[in-house]
Length: 129
Image (cartoon, rainbow, N blue to C red; front, side, top):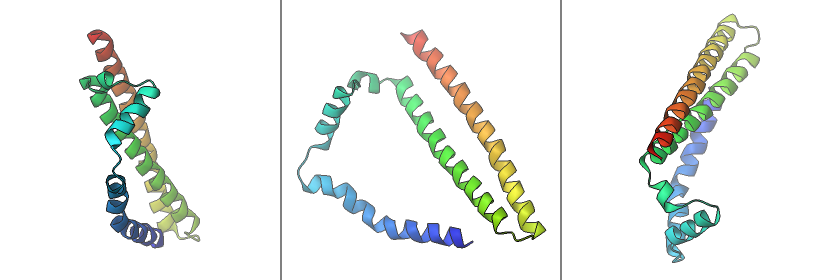
């Protein structure tokens, strides 16, 4: 419960500063889109490949699965902390074991979803080209 309160407090503290970070680039007069295009082309990415529907879907899936991976990591850490602080309380240990088991099952589902989506997207891309 204490960890949850700390995370909520940190998020609420950082939330008001988010618009300041986004508006600082506009205040300096820098054309962010041009700068990002220059950096992207220097890194070997082209605008044409970014506009492809399959690449857009692939990027969306990759971002979603990455976010879910972070959620998995947070759940594992929470379950570990709950288990370590149980102090022999069987209810807390069982709760931690349940969270841990659910997290591992979720990870298996997550990795399976990634493998299936990678297979499907790569086959769609190869059939289009």
